[in-house]
Image (cartoon, rainbow, N blue to C red; front, side, top):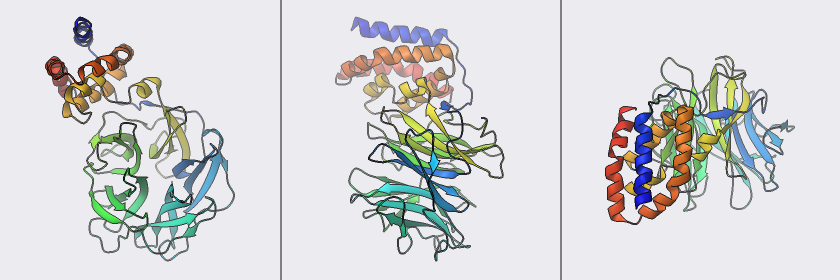
Length: 378
C-alpha cells in the first residue's frame, strides 16, 4: 500500500510541476520513399507465405503489387478489376479485399456508371483473376440517406462470424461514414450513419487485442487540408474521436494531401499504415507509409490505472485522460519520459487494484483532479 501511494504522489508532483502544451502534428513516423507510384486507395493483405499483396486504384481500375518486406513493392502485370460492367461502366475503384472461410478472395469496390456510385464485389481463387459477383452489394439508386453515393468500402469479420461494412455516403451533404451488416458477405443490410462529424471519410478499421475497435480515417476540417485521424469504439458502432493527428500533410511526397489509410498488423506486434499522399490538391497520388513512433506504439493502449479504477476503457474519464496523454504529455520530451515511467510501473499497480473495491474508490478520488485538468485541456 505504501509503495502504491508513493507512486501516486510522484505522479501528482510531476504533473503539477510541469506545464506542458500540445501542438497539432502527426504522431506516426513517415517512412522515407514511395511504396507504390501513381496509386491511391490501398488495401493490403499478408499472404500465408508471409508476402504482402496490395490492391489499389490506378487510372479508374484496380491493380495490384507484391512485396516481401512491406517496404519495397513490385507492380504485378494485368488488371484485377476493370471497368465496363453494368454498374461500373465508367470506373471500378477503391478496393477492399478479404479472405473468405473457404480460402477464396473477395474484393469489394466502388463502381460508377455515370449516375450512381455503388459497392460491388468480385471473387477469386488465387487473388489475381477475379470474377465479378452478380448484382449490387450496396445500392444507392433509391436511398435518400446515401444520396447516390456509396464509396470506399471497408469490411471486417466480427467475432460471431458476421461481417460489417463501413462505407462513405452522401458526398454532397454529410460526407461521412455509414455501416451495413451481412451473414454471407454478399447480401447486406444497411445500418444508420455513424456518430462522426461531417467530412469524415476513407474508413479503415482494426480490432485491437482487448476487443475494442480503432478506426483510422481521413478528416478535413473546414478550410484546412485533409489529415488522417482515428476514433475508438467498444462495439464498432458508437465512436469516440481520439485527440491529435495520426498522419498530417507536409512531407516530401505529401505536402498538400494525405488520404486513404490502410493499416496492417505486422508479425512483430506493431503496425504499418499505407496511405495516399500528394503534393497537389489536383491528384497525382503516390502510396506512402508510416509506422507508430516508439512512444505512440508503447502507449497506444488505454491508461492502465484509470481503466482498473473505472472498470472499463470506455469510461468518459479514461477517454479524457488518454486524450490528455496523447494531446499534451506526448508532445514534449519531458512528457514522454513521464509516460514511459508510468507505463513501466503502472501495470502491476492496475492488476493489484482491479479486484479491490476500496482501492478502486481511493484511486478514483485521487484521479479526480487529473480528470478535471484533462477536461480543461480539450
